[in-house]
Length: 248
Ligand SMILES: [Zn+2]
Image (cartoon, rainbow, N blue to C red; front, top):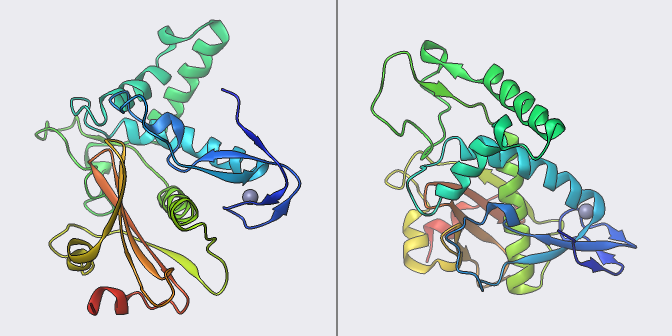
């Protein structure tokens, strides 16, 4: 899978001016489910090589952990859930070395997993909770660093602003990450429903955005992954996202 080489310029992620860039998928290429229409145009942005590799590593790891929590029967996530399982199955290995790599990765995820009473009531990501009726003692939970949800959300926000508006998110603007328990208690929901722009690459990702008219950059973002869970972010110059959701 060769990445498209681009010349010198600014990296959309770290904002550094660099000599060499390549093209990075805003929604990681391997995260598009098999049910994605074949000629869908995928969002791509110019990235420096270190950012691209760094995100690539995180995205591969995160995809496996999320894949283990996704619905294996929903067409939006079936191939992702399957891919996650296969990547941990030695018998799916292409050779002995690959089989061993898969076995180790599976063991490391199992070692970190929580089972039964170890699973706390709090901290379960909304939309990624229990998928089946509770079978006592057989519940298990995968640990996913919160930082990874933050990083992938920030990347998608930067990427969409670049693709849609040709703009970079630079000082004094900053991106903050949010999670809401559900739509009913989410204070931003009315604003999204009333005036959210929609950027979709279905069924993998649907993004809604409320954007301020005066600067065209201050925004609220809702990112929905595989129709199953959502993350949120604000882009503000003064850290005050409430003006956008309250007015209008
Ligand atoms: Zn960079």
